[in-house]
Length: 218
Image (cartoon, rainbow, N blue to C red; front, side, top):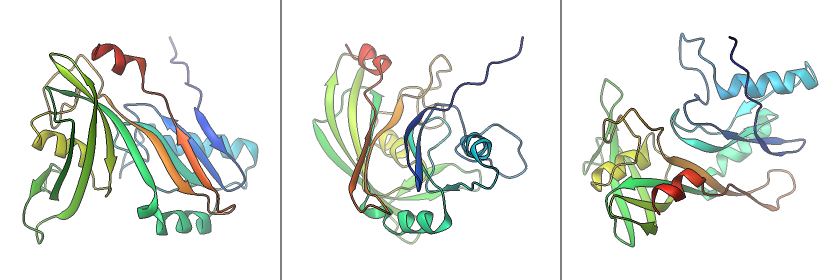
């Protein structure tokens, strides 16, 4: 039986950008020497079908197992403008973690990477790149906490590493958390607020908290 191709989930589109809801388990863009399906190729195919001269440029990435909002630019100039102002972009996530967290906290460290691509926190600024993660507790039960997470920096695996450091790893995170293959990772990039590169208006893209997240923390 052939697998049905899932329809691209477009959250916003105009002449300069297209914003997609990436599912968990899908690479944002292919890595070297792999033909694996990825979000970039799906967006490229969508744009190419509309006009074979259309181009698409990746602005930022999400981890394979993180779901949520990803922005693509339709020209290199728009891509550069978005990336140049990316530190002014408000990026919010929602996560379900093991255990009970504080009501609010800010986690700071320098994140470094091993030769086997495992990221870890260090206090040595010469060893890693500065990372800052803020979170607020939405609700909790005996096993899990539902968190709103705001990142001040965008380091690779940042939220996952900081939740591990906090002794409250993300549910379904098999790399930095509990070895549980029964569930996908419960981390979603659910809100993005940025200045539109053309209209200069504040643009807010937001996804609701997934029902699966809410149900687990009832």
